Length: 364
Length: 118
Image (cartoon, rainbow over all chains, first blue to last red; front, side):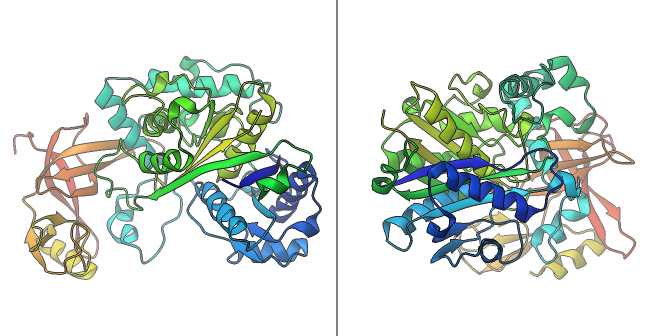
């Protein structure tokens, strides 16, 4: 394909005390600086989470009048969807320089609630809300329960995911848990139980944070300072909003999304050097590894492909939607790891509701 | 069947499902089309009230813990529900329908063990 990521950056992470638009501006300007491009070059903008008219709002704040925009909302997977839309828009000639960005100040603003939001007028409001599920937690908890039951595993097996995430975050100074030292399985198991079988340390962090990437034509990216990271393929799948819709909790839309991305890239899981997978909860990692084709069913805890190198949502940063930071980390890995040539990024949103996979590559 | 009709039937402790006359498949929640074939000839039928626990989670971080579950009905559809009087729930355990009265006269379908001697 003919579109590449030319720049990538995080905004401030953790507990920043800054507004969403301040953090967004940091992300956008840092990613543009990384790409060696001025703000005035941006003619495409994709973002959400700011206001009803998110891309328009950010454009106003930055003094831009983009020729292309996208403010689709599909939870944390949407940033991988934006990559697909942006690549198509650049290839079609609708715009030349797209910035995909996101930022949240949810920790500073204390805006996250355990029960989540019930949207009035939806079938879920009528048929599911009376049972008081925690959204999204109860769904992931039921998925974890089914997973442990089906494969004869225990909470301790799942805890290994949180332990591994913490270990990776100790190598990442930007991570929320950096410097906190290793986590043990016993600590994960003794953390307060939230919704069985998931305890507090099975759940992702609640932090401020965000990031941005800059896309342009691969041809133009070759003349910019950073090694271009080419978009090799993408695929997506929407499956459900209700907690009772999915016929099988252990088969998510990640299967179809990844299959579509692999087909478009003409690659297989064996060709992928590093994976960035949305780890909203510990269960998300083994289940995701299986669906993406990096492990057989029931063996996702033993996947060997390097993954979630930043520490992920469990140990690095989780600003409500992790999708854009998965892309930022994939770009960094491809730039800095000498042998790495391909990366797979998989975002999920809601309760495994939306899925999007992006495959990236570099020519070394 | 509308959402209101479905809830109205719970006043008589009836759990209603839609049955598609075209592809002969049950569905829940009620819709104006069949999600199996897109057909619109949907008959209202009473559920037998039996099923198995697909999965469950006990919400511990609540004033009084409660257990949410996905119950796979004998007819096929899955219901999000709560389990009651079932201290040790397990996946694949058979359950049967019970009713929890609501202040407005409606009833909330919940499930209890199918093997509780009652």
